[in-house]
Image (tube, rainbow, N blue to C red; front, top):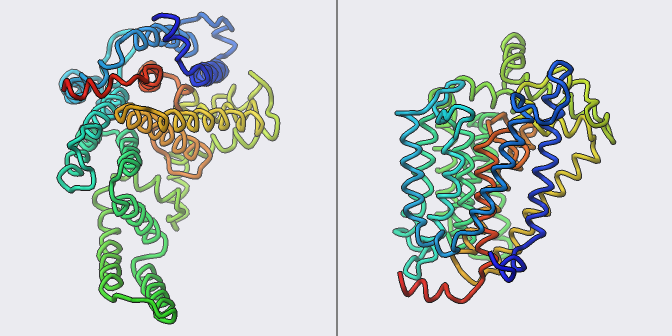
Length: 434
């Protein structure tokens, strides 16, 4: 790497990355330190010591990622994607099962979760496909191929089964929408989700009646304003509503597994049986309840670093991984939590800014993919920890303990930093070469 390239690196993004990683490590240290294991940060038998190793290796990965020619990531995007799919299939043959999920390769000192790296591979494959001048995402044939690229890793990850990680791949819909995918896909997905949730809460009949009243009032309002009012779309929308709402209960009872039903029931407060509700709270809802209690106990300014009583008492299970933000809330309070949220927000906004200024379509699409993936992880994890969303196994980027997660997010981000630093007009020549 020469001095000219180093000057082109977006150092603001790099600084935000290292700030988040450092703050994340401080909270892993706080959530796993006890009187029995001492206070040495170099105790590599503890979570904080292992995470320090992962951070050190990440720094080496960063140098390697930045040293590779930027064109490599586009030229070999398809190969990287196929290798990623092969690694997802391989876990069923050579992988390790943890908590009922066959999603890891056991390498001795640590485990690798290929599903985390598949996000980068899918982002590269989609960017390469959509950047082709012959690809017209407004045509159904190209839409189908793009959705297949996105859907293949979802299928393999669901079979592990890891629905939380599979959900993150839906973030690519936002990228496809940005690149011209008809809005009907995005709005249909949001509409179906809304119908599913409201039907569970209020029943199919109630939702259908409210929908019918709304459509009638909207129809009359448009007619009163003397605008064209085609009847067929209203009838079609109502029929779709009836079909969807009628199938919700069957889907919920027969497709979702019991622990998924329990999480949704607890989130939407669907359970009326006090005994059953108490049972769900003790099992599925225990983590969220303890997490909310830890965060609320932090108050405005927090109890102080290493002073979290609920953290030190081990009340929140998996506090160093998916529930790491509860440590932030208890020890740093509202102020510290706000700082962390603002840092993530600044990072996301910076990524959107960088993506929009790219000269290469490939780089722009990949940049938006990075922002979308991080946005999904950040939003869902924080929402889960504070009880706004149902519990799903999604880590907080750069914060949650684990080598796979940290390395995968580092790879995802720094590939884009490399692409951004190489904004040159040679991409057109490369496309001709292809």
